[in-house]
Length: 351
Image (cartoon, rainbow, N blue to C red):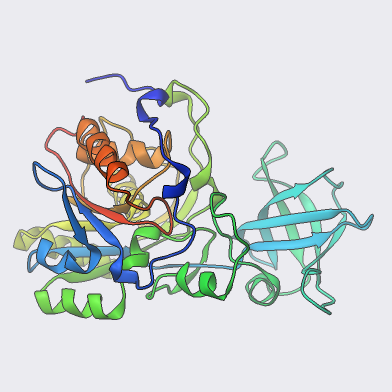
């Protein structure tokens, strides 16, 4: 087994290939079919013909919340919060961006960027998950989901440069989002619309869902050449009993489990390894990982040197993935959250 380092997952990506806006129609995105010996350029709505009756598509049904909040300190200094998790009792865990961190007990006034808005208060309780944690715990003055819905902004990824708009509110969300809690969309699922879902059902492809609340840590860069030294972020997931049953039935009939997005892969493989249907996962999937559940993957194109590049390389094989990325760049595919997608098979020896 080859020993991989961070530099192995680097590549040159022209800035203009980073998609700033979604395709006009969800299923009109391009789809790079990487399941055969040669890459095939397709359109995403071709997906039904690439799957077989009895296959099981597994989606992440998390819902993106308006987790970015702008406010000010008592001094008038600006502060920005990105809510990572909602806790009981009107408390949240958040990233905080400000020139100088305020002391515990400080009451911030949030939502002040909304015209003629009194906003709401957020009291700093301390760091999280412990005194040395990188995140902060706040007590909001009312129910956090309601406050974010009224005062928050769509938490667009750092590589999307425009301010959030009504288009982002609609399109940076899957059509089947059900459980609020994500600060980043499960982007591979953004390509599915109702017409495509109906065509898949007519084809005999079945559906199931898991929930993983995608955290801002998904954009966290890997800073060490030695991948084993990287500490993955933690995210909450749930695998419902109905999905466990659907996975067993798929295996029994000889179907393939098709994960829609890397977050679904992380959820299913975390469940398989831990035996826990609900909990937190910080699973780090790199080449050499032994997959227990996922047979195929639908995924967008990821950042150089990212943990997601490592995950797709673990599943489909490093040389295969890097070759597909070279093809995608040459053919001007659109990258990242609002970009195009690819379909990959798990290799027998993904290395």
